Image (tube, rainbow, N blue to C red):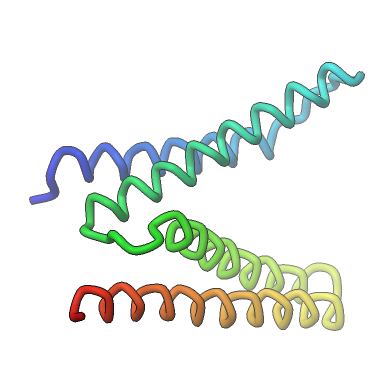
Length: 130
C-alpha cells in the first residue's frame, strides 16, 4: 500500500501536469502586456509546483543526494520521451525530414539526461556505501 504522503505527492504531480495541459490548450483572445505577464507567471508557478512535487516524491522514496537535480533530470527525461512521440507525429503529419530531426534531437536529449540521472544515482549509492 502506498503511504498517504506519497499518494499526495503523486496526485499533486498529476494535478500540475493537468494544469500544464489545460494552460497549453486554452485559446484565449486576450492581448496586451498584462495578459502576457499573467500567463508567464501562471506557467512559472505551475512548473515550480511540478518540480517541487517531483522533488517531494523523490525525498519520500528515500533519495538524499542532490534531490533537486534528480527531480529536474527525471522531468527532463519524461519531456524528452514526449518530444520523441511528438517527432513521430511530425513524421506522419508534416514531413519525414522535420519529424526525423525532432526525433533525433529529443533522443539525444533523453540519452544525455538519462546518463546524468544514472550518474547522480550512482553517486548516491556510493555515498551510502562509504
